[in-house]
Image 1 (cartoon, rainbow, N blue to C red):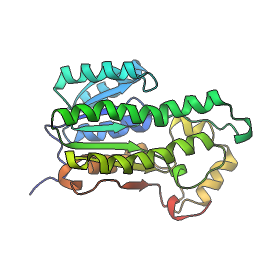
Image 2: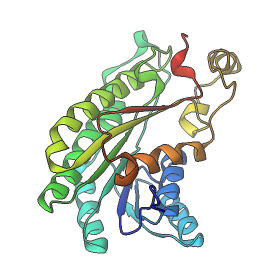
Image 3: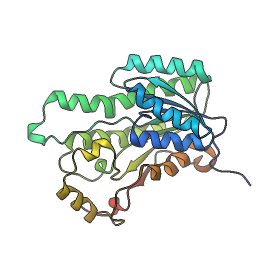
Length: 256
């Protein structure tokens, strides 16, 4: 019987793969046989993810890059190609957040968050997709969005705007890259215990979120792996592109 989720022979590039959620998804891809390039600003954290993948029998290597500095991304892309020849899967999982109220927001903070969450994602995708097209290498690009991209949430204005942009970019590029056999989809996570979420969640805020989450709990990082593996696999999701796949405990079905 065919294993729909087998990624053996594939190479995945996990941008932000040194983060809690990005690292979990990278581990999931590696568990299905993909070689994984763990890319992030913090080499120490990237190495932790790489070593865990290797300890579980997978293949991974760490690379340093900051999506707000595209020269570092270009350098990492060249290093990854030298390591493995190319890539079939790109996971865009960098993220930056802030709880600054709208009326207190300044242009520096807006630019800082947008540089990582939207501008960085767009031009990182350009770098990696261009090489996939040049090599005639079909595959999958997976962008990480957020429930705040579709449901207006207080206290995360800039983050929400950036992730709404990610949704639009995902659907535009799905059409743009379809003739090249490259699928572009996004995962919309709900509330997971990542570091950036914990910083802005007071007890009252947590109670409000749980009140609008039918499953009445936060997600666990491992619960994003199935969605990432599904979208990475040509066998499982070969006719899926431009989709926004929610992994949110039912939050998207509620009103807050």
